[in-house]
Image (cartoon, rainbow, N blue to C red; front, side):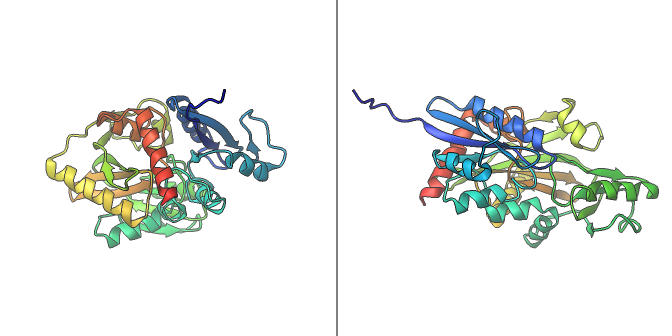
Length: 323
C-alpha cells in the first residue's frame, strides 16, 4: 500500500566556507539542522576552508561542486548558512540562481551591496540615514585620514574580524595592516560614542515586512569585537529601552534599507544611538542564526520562537521562487 503521508520538505543546509567565519557558519548550520521541526528533512553540506565540498557524511565529494549540485537538486530549498566572503556576499545566491534552486535569504545584489560596508553607507546616506565619517584605505601606510580616535575595519568581512580601535598614531599602521590582511580595502571611521542598538527585518511569504523589537548590546565601554561577540561576556537587553519615536525611527531606517538593498529573508541592521540620533554601523544579510544569536533572540522576544523563525524563512524562500 502506498503511503499518502506528505513528503518532508528537504532542506539543503550549507555551512562552513572559505573565510575567517568558517567556524561561526558551522555553528549556524548545525543549529538550523537541529531546530527544524517535524515535516522538514535536513541535508547538510559543508564547504571546507580550502573550498572542498563535503557531503552529509562529512567526507569530500568525489566530483566536488558538480556532486554538490546533484545533491542540491534533490532538495526542495537551499538554506545557505555561510557568513562572510564567498557566501554572504551573494556567491552562494548566484550559484542557486544559476541552478534555478529556491534559497533562503537575500539574492546576489543585496548580498554584494550589504557585504561592502562602504557601498552600504553610500546608499544609506542617499536615503538620508546618518553614517559615520569615513575614508577608504588600500595600503598599510600613510597617516590617519581622520582625527583620532578612529576604527579600522575590512570593507567586506564579518564577525568583527580585523576590526580595531586606534587611539594613538603609532597604532594606525598595524591596525590597517590587520584589516588589509582580510580584504584589499579597509574602512577608516570616526569613533561613535553612543549606545549600540540592533533591529532585524523579516520578509514573510506574502512579502510583507515585519520588524523585531530592538536589541541593545551592553559592552561596558569595550569595542564589540570578535572576542567579545563569542566569549560569552556580551550582554543583550531586549527590548532596548527606547522612546516610541526612537523605535519608530529605527524601524523606518531598517525597512527603507531592506528595500533599497533589495534584501530578502531576514537581515540585521546595526546602529549607534548618539547625541545626533541613530547612525548606521552596518547591515548583515546573513546574520548569525543560532538560537542564541541576536536575530533569533529579537524575534523570540516578539513571540516567534527559533523553529518558527526558520519555517518563516523557508516559506518565504519557496514563495519567492514560485513568483
